[in-house]
Length: 162
Image 1 (cartoon, rainbow, N blue to C red):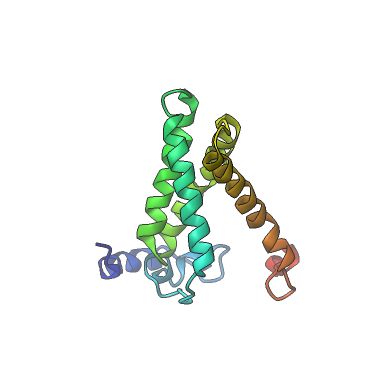
Image 2: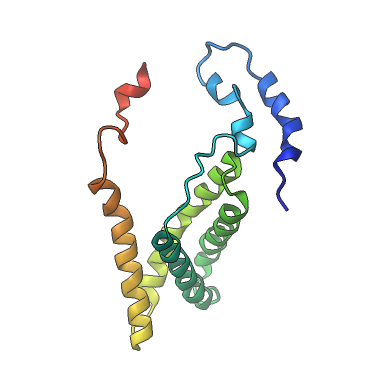
């Protein structure tokens, strides 16, 4: 469905846009094959627990989000952009440019989660467990990177200036 070889013709065009190698931001245009291929992929495979948490939270958000599409008119755009991000991220794999677009749309996940968590009535045990899972999952997603940060994995603003 998605063949990287099709993009090889366009890589030449992006390399041609680089006028000067010492110009600011020319690094984005140099070696443009990383944007349209998986050449920059490190081949890391996500853990099964991370995949399970993503799958379950996406299913919960989609299931409860569909219930609110007709009731909350302002909810349609964030919901469909979040849904589009799931599709783009699955199709793109390790290809840089589509993955960045999908991650950009994935910011709407928090809006969808906020509506789902605030509007859902926790009347039965299944709904309560689903909402509790969302809270624990998102709490862990925000706190875990702070606990595992080391000087080797962190970048400071003065590292970028040089």
